[in-house]
Image (cartoon, rainbow, N blue to C red):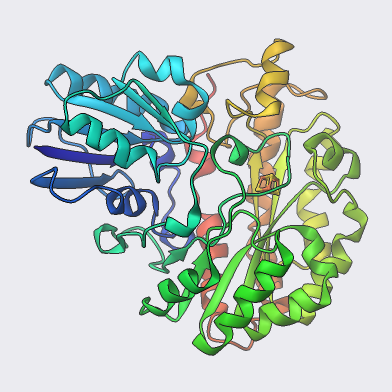
Length: 434
Ligand code: SF4
């Protein structure tokens, strides 16, 4: 039997790529994890396609089984693949964030939905399939990350990415931000430190990126992991929350173990909007102090902001480039607030009739898909593009290079590349009013 695994990508999403977008991307772990879960001896051939770097050809080979993983913005593309492969006689199973939240919709295009974590469900489904009785729905809440297999990185491509390998120690987060879909998929369940260290030891690259949504969320675990990483002499980056900037021991240990960058969802410069977002840390007036504290430990910061909360006004959003300058961040990025199915935000906006479309390819963080409280969706789109454009004027990029704690290090070029990548992201040219 032949198996094909696809990580689907929305075609429009790909067109947002700019000339330097390889400086902004890391290899996808989805297929590497799924591949590592395929039991030996069932399939004579297992092919994979990451649409980030390769096209899907429906007729090249006949596959008995096609498995497709996708997020909301790629749902339309993924359903097109499902329909095409089923028409050609393949059995189709889907998984990932969107099918997890939209089971009934996904079952209109696929034979099986695998919701939530794949670790137990995928091998179970594959055995059932091989024995001729696959189920329609799989969801296992009892995944133990101690059994997490080492992802099959050999099948991933570095094309269109920075090529820095990614590692996951704990993919859950105990926070409950209103717009975040993390909780629909995973619970916090850190892997044993020894397993993570073994995996990192096997990586040739000196640079490593952690995909954990909140690396320091379980403080004692993070400290233990970082102390164990110190002898490996890797340089690494991760996602963090703003309160990291007030924890001296965490910042010091992070730097000593090789942490040189954190991505923080600062989300807004307004404390009321942080309240709308359901953030635990809501003191936007402390951001400058936090940035300075983290910088003092030699760690650079990518600060991410979301536009479109109910408390956001046009004036506040339009002032973002200047306010971000005043923080002294090393890199910044912006997104339009997007209510993904399965989140509290989606449920609230749907109930109140404020969603203006359920055309899933618009749910890509570049377009307003709901009516904001204080402006029209069109105005939010315009302001979003203006903020991107002004934030990546050359003078601002060079200012960021000058204030960065990386300014005398070789990896300042990664930061410069990322800033230039965002400058040419292509948001202006691809914006279409619908
Ligand atoms: S802190 Fe980040 S990962 Fe955690 S719930 Fe909020 S947005 Fe999601």
